[in-house]
Length: 232
Image (cartoon, rainbow, N blue to C red; front, side, top):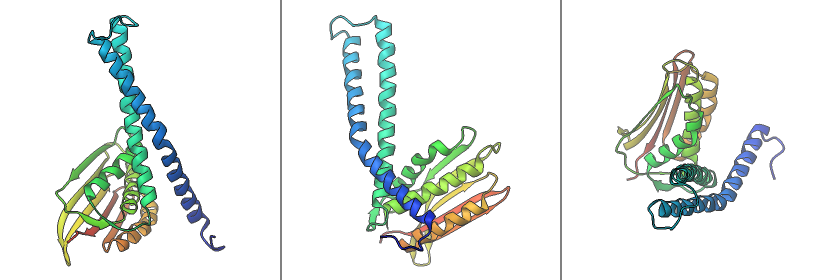
């Protein structure tokens, strides 16, 4: 049972995360069935278009157009299913035991989850360096990075020529190799949001025996740096 003095916002976020995780789990099966059903229809139409399925139910050009529309729906369904799976995995692994993982994969997942927040006029540059594995709680890192990219997207929104940069590097630290994850934007800057996110960033960094820094200036965008020790 929650303590009476717990922050209502914290409780709301926890409840929202739990709900999102449950919804993601419930959607896995119907999304898979939808994707597989569309794939079967595309296969049947391909069979007809290639002349192996007997008389076509529609004229050739109409059947071909129908096939393309269903194929596009299949690709969209596959994308939604992947995003749903990634979101569910991130939420359900939050707060659990650390694992040795591919950090670039976590960054990719976080970026994919937040692409819808990036406006059409904002350029996104992703630069994955060759980095070793790290021992982290995957969900914590994914949700933190998703939050950082969201802030960068909001900062860059409606700023002509603004861009977002996401990159990873393996760099030498005081205790050995470290994986550095950088998220930056050249937008209007959101100091208050960056300050709030930095609290979460420091918590995640502490759990990973790493470090976190987040800075932002009005008119100068924001810069985040998460450093995690490489798995030895």
